[in-house]
Length: 334
Image (cartoon, rainbow, N blue to C red; front, side, top):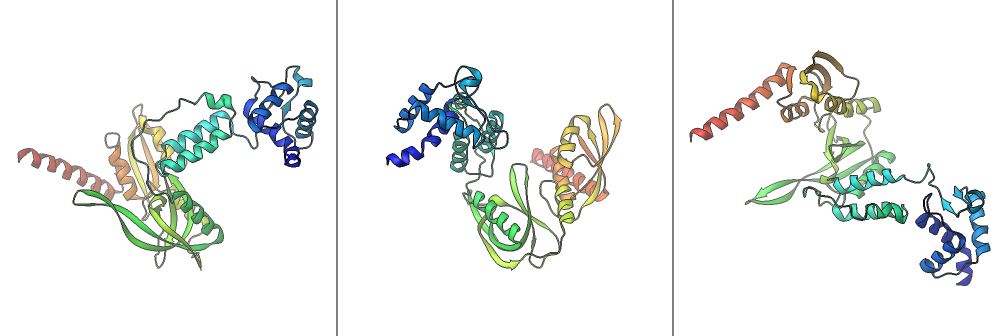
């Protein structure tokens, strides 16, 4: 055991520096020695500590400020190529806390791993961290595994098979129901509106489809190779022009929009779109997208968007609005 402890000296020292030191909290050799004794119940003499710190600096290229340099003590700096900054860790924690595609216990485990990357002083700042959000997270614990399996299938250029489910109401009780078993060629994974989707070609189909990865269960990677009906450019065009992951045939869509939605339009459709200022309060836009997807996008922003072309999409939206208004009038008169 003593031999193992001796061989582990450099790791004890490195872990102590990572956990307890930064530019505002420098450690003396005595403090490093005491913390190793407290955390690992191991005694290391001062010369061994200094020698191993020099080894970490010179041989393994850790950025460690030493007593000889600062005349105060020792601390380790973050490696910009491997270590996350505090703000980056916070962004990751927030993402997994609020992301709908991941079950709470898996999100919590990922967050714990993120906190273990930080020193005690960084974690102290978020000790009272709390979130308030709706109960909208998935209960499908397979999502992370699904991402791994689909990624492996894409890399190996193999087809996959999975069951796909949806919500149904059975006597006012919300239940899940397997819709069908799907076999397809996966091409890409995209993230949109807090959900992951797989872009794929179903067997015997001629167009691309999208499926929510959190609704996929029992993924099997098949030995059959993927179909090569679509090249990378076609798949990228499909992804760029998609709204809310609806499939179908893309069309040029022209609309007039309130200026306050300019940021949203650019974020949703990218910068390679046609934009023309009408006045201080409105602008004209032309995008390449899927009519079904854009229909719901326009309805969500009904007060600020007016579809001009294609006429068929404009008629569909008008019919939805008219049907809704008629239903309101009917309900009022009953």
